[in-house]
Length: 93
Image (cartoon, rainbow, N blue to C red; front, side):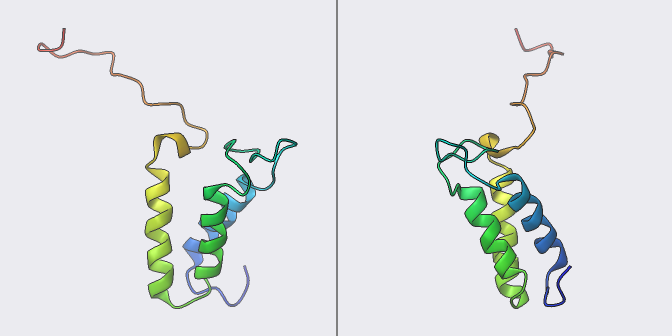
């Protein structure tokens, strides 16, 4: 880890996202998510990497941005879409 990192966890999250959204394919789409390169997660990860070296207030804002992108169903890398529960209650028919 570089010595100028202020927010270690934000930096680690940024590195993980940068590793996933690393390059475009031959159609200029991200190899991980398929969005047009550079994709929104890549740009956010680059922003998080830079913010992890700045004062904590800037890192705090980017941390919330990272958490909000994880809540988007289409951005859940490696996860399937949520399934409907198989056990139904007495009022579900």
